[in-house]
Every structure is written in structure tokens, then in C-alpha cells.
Image 1 (cartoon, rainbow, N blue to C red):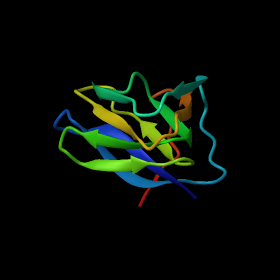
Image 2: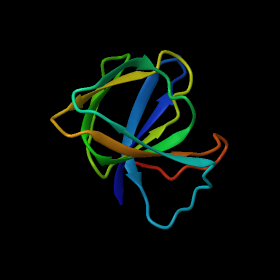
Image 3: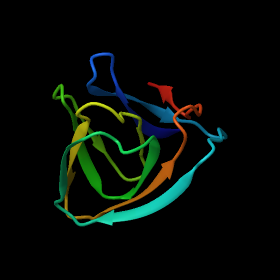
Image 4: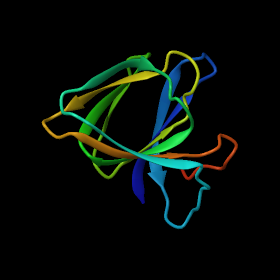
Length: 118
């Protein structure tokens, strides 16, 4: 199993996350795929996810923060499942000296997602 974090908008309208895993052999239909690289020491202030998507981190380490103050560290090889498309969202900052190389895999929000809570 691959470590994953599910970002979602709670009943209070604020982003929150659950820690868990994506499992082997579960297919999710994808709408599109995008690759992106961000230079080291970057940050992105409060924002909701632009769409429902898997974010596959290939390189780089980031700290994500929710409006509640809860935080987690996203490391290479881990998956972010971004579904917090409403509300103030989340923010992130890069840690270390590596760029953030990632792949976005967009899926329809009504699709079943591959996530098992820890």
C-alpha cells in the first residue's frame, strides 16, 4: 500500500485531512494528467483544490496546513487526494532543497476514489 492523504471540505466548510493508503489493483478513471515542477523553497498561501485530483509526488517534501492548524508532511512517493474544492482550502510550503516534481491526475468528483483510512 502507498501512503496517502485525503483532503476534503468538512461540514464546517473548512479543509481537513485523513491519513491512509491507496491500495493495489484499484482503477480510477482519469480525465486528464498534468506534470509540474516547482522550485525549492516555494510556498502557496490559502487555496482550495482547483478540481478533484490525485497529486503524485515524485520529488520534493512539503508541509501542508489546514485552517484548523493541523499539519502533515508530504514526501516523495506519497499521494495527495485533493477534494477540498470549496472553502478557504489549505496552504503548503516546501521543505529542503529539492524541487517539487509531481503529477496531477484529475478525476470526476462522483468517481469512487482509491483511499483506505489508516
